[in-house]
Length: 235
Image (cartoon, one colour):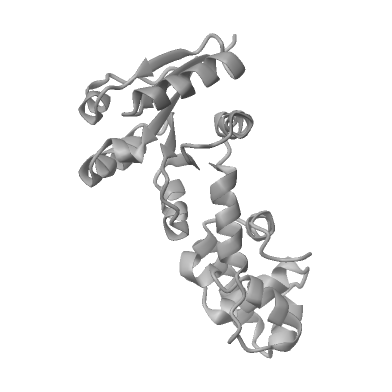
């Protein structure tokens, strides 16, 4: 049985709202049910019921409401995890993106996203992936990969560490954890890391567990995937 698609558009600008509505109907899901939301208050008045035969998506314009309503939105998404949340914003703040994803936002996009990019972005989100619009993704990569000219050269790991100099801002990684992440992504096991950095096996393993926790991943494979997908390392 094909899943029904229900899309809530909490967008204050009527032209923008009609644009996204037309794009969804014409290029993504002709049979989708579109529900425009005229005010932030209306969103919280809706009676949401979990339906295994229905995929529900909420596209929420950050300029549509006050900070108070945005906080309510984030709490709302925590309580309704069956709803896929997409945040529409013009503000680029890479430190907030991980927070957005952690609180239930599945995707972040800008208002002037190209139609073909929107289709790909929307389908990624619909398929359960976390997504950034190309503009934001490019900005994140630029921020992550900006080189610090004052960063000391530290032998084998110096190039990769320069690429990772913004990781500590977002994930709270220490300098040592960044070194170890670089080595892990380049195929080093715990014994090899302990030998190369002159630390005990126990210390190396403790650092590995801390990195897993800070990146919010379950295993080393996911850890490497996060770093590689963000173009942080060369492997």
